[in-house]
Length: 106
Image (cartoon, rainbow, N blue to C red; front, side, top):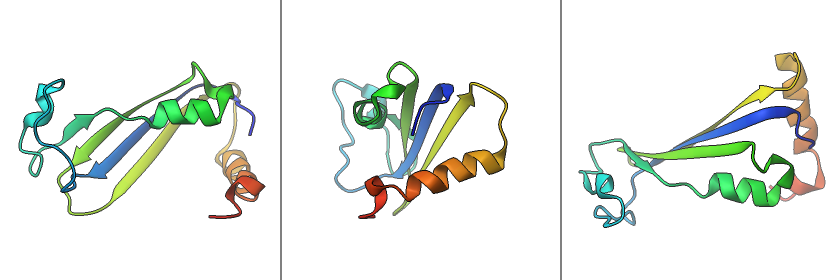
């Protein structure tokens, strides 16, 4: 899929898990009671995205937040299009991309 946007931003909310550490020397804010607080966290998703899709280098950034729920996650990707577009056009791009070889194993 060709990049047709000026910038993208990825927000990922995910559950606090038993494997998450509650004490971080490099990030003291992470030492809060994770089971009852929203905790900002670093994410490698933006870096991984630009490695997999180099056309997004310099355009893609993101943030992760650990949330006090037993299970689950949600991702949101927001972008600014280079030109006027419609919801239907964006949905069609996503539908077309989902049919490529990249996603046949999913």
